[in-house]
Amino acid sequence: MKIYCIAICGKGIGNLAVLLKKQGHDVRGSEFSEKTFYPPMSTYLKENYIPVDIGFDPDKITKDYDLIILGGAALIHDKNNPQIQRAKELGLNTISFARGIGDFIAAEEAIEVIGNHGKTTITSIIAWCFQKMRVDASYFIGEVPKNMQESIHKGTSCYSVVEGDEHPSLYQEKGGKFLYHRPKHILFTSADWDHKNIYRTEKSYLRAFLELFELLPEDGSIVACIDGINVPEVLTKISKNIPIYLYTLGTFKSGDTNFDFEEAVNHIRDKFIKFKNKYRKLGKLVKRIYFISYLDYNYSPDETRFQVCYLDLETEKAEVIGHFITHLIGDIGVENSLASIARLHSLGFKYDQINEGIETFMGQTRRLELVYNKGYKVINDFAHSPIKIKSTLHAVRQKYKNQQIFVIFHVIQSGLKEKTTFYQLKNVFNEANFVIIPPVNPNPAAEEKFYGKDYQNLIKEGAEENGDYLKPTNVYYTPIIHQIRSILENNLRKDDIVLIMSSGNVSEILEIVSGINLHS
Image (cartoon, rainbow, N blue to C red; front, top):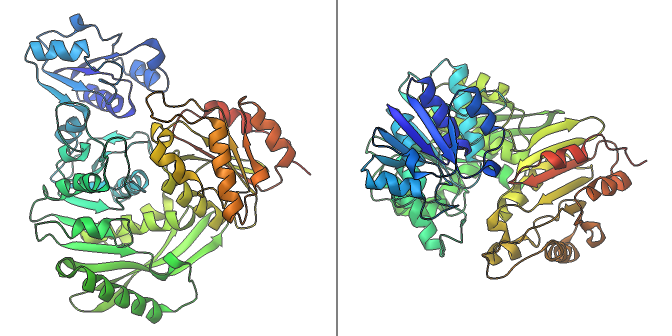
């Protein structure tokens, strides 16, 4: 097939283009400008001999193309993209990147991981577990996991696992991108109202998830977090009788670690009784609840050990699956591991098959990724919403209770520059000791523009109200990015933590925070 990819430098479409090229297709693409065609994707495309036209020149679109695939940025730079217009004029088959994932990646037993917390990591864990089990599953992940060489793969087995996205496609397809991935099985983590510039009400946001569930076949299945924000509210509205498997950290969700197995089981029974009384229809569809019955964050300096069990709601018996070890940090790491275990176990995979994948998974790039460890640690995380920032910081504080934590809050994500989201940031940093805010470019389209000083003042207010760790005097805004280094040099001590929270390019910040002379 002869394929042309518009806005090819995006992580998703760029990787898909290379996959299609390796499969033998004739692939070419375009990018808006030299500024938007940059490494690592530009290098990756060149290494795989995919020609890229700079500029959206309509003359590059000819009638001999079999397929036109649109990247996520195809309409961002030009809402009347001339290449798309030419493709329409020629009557060419034109699809979004989202539909391309469904067409080229989805397998018969397709797993979709959805929700706005943990989906990248969970998708990566499941894909890695499949590899360790020698199951050649297809997969698509937003970032390349540390264990793996690529973020996209077309396998030969009946399984696939894909990271879903509720954000709408930018082309003619309506609804969230995940609607075009053709899933049979879903793993649902949360539905905390996000993308508020697009979904103006929480109801419209939740409807996007419900639309996906209504596409599931009758022989599909759902694994969902009972504690996930809005998860029961969405599930209870599904019209189909699809089996549901729930998971929860159990009493560990509230920080209680002092109980035995029977107490853990009784807690889960009580939890489900309350759940069933509130969601009667939904309660009848639940087959099992997976939960943690033992948890040791201090098993080793870099590992957490935990035991996974499940309560069978048909037999009312609790069964132990086994002990697992994870390198992931805090309750986020344990919960993401538990979700992956529940999804695989509910499909029939056993402890001996799953265990090696969980224990050897080394984490996800830009998801609590340890990138520097010489006297102090630097952790890089993809921060894109207030609740994600807060939960990530909490996980780091769980693991490093006595160390100082320095957060570098790099405001890049456009959603963090919206009025509705800005004010939610007030108290999310209170488990840090220091917050450093590099230069901020306001969103020019926002109704109210926010600058670096505005973020500094807001976070200071949060510290004044409830700052067990963070003090107002330790919230810095620096219009000169290299001043980050002097702030660290004056305060950073041995074994402290520097947590970079950004959704943008942090290569310059990484260079600045490496090799700091520690404060005595």
